[in-house]
Image 1: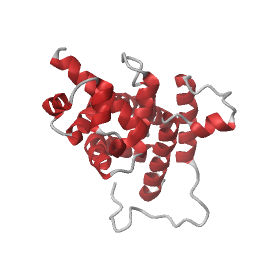
Image 2: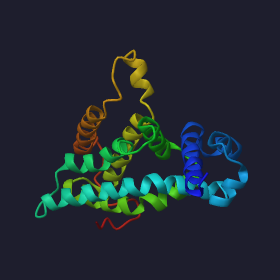
Image 3: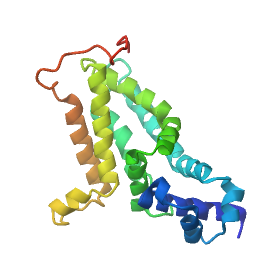
Amino acid sequence: MKPAATRERILDAAERLFAERGYDGASLRAITGQARVNLAAVNYHFRSKRALMRAVFARRLEPLNQKRLALLETCMAARANGPPDLERLVEALVAPAFRMGEQSTGDAAALRKFMGWVLVDPGVQIERVLAEQFHEVALHFVAAFRRALPDLPPEELFWRIHFSIGAMASVLTGAPFLKIASGGRLDTSDVDGVVQRLVAYISGGLRAPLASGRRRRRGPPGGSGAS
């Protein structure tokens, strides 16, 4: 087998098992067994489990975030002299995660589940890689949301973006509650329909009035409030 093909098989197996079991639960033995390679192959291509995880993330998240930033640039250019359209901003953030498997030879549903796991796994190792992969895209999107929602206090905006990411992650991981509550009648495989509903839901939450009694703050605790 060619080295490139071996490397891809290891990445595919690691991606599936990380999504199913988490980083700690996916052993190198399980990964090599599913990839049908020996441990020496993993050591040759990746050196360590941590390096393998970083390669798995980079393979999916780098093109995903490039797509997000390209959509964001288009959105901002359309309203260069005013606040950007909120729904288009949300769609630029959300849609690429649901469509990331459409041009892949792999299982699109499995890729979406992987993306959901990336967002909800609380492991320290995962957080470090996420900080590397999402830092730039987070800065750009926060700045864009501030322009779209200039009257929303920064602290509140951060919370609402956090809740929005949580909603997206829940759907990406398979929406188990939706399946249970609907008796399996709702079709979560309709990607366009899911994205449309999620964009409407998140946009509504971002626009919602402040909770009654909340004191307006001009910035995060201890911060200057400058945007």
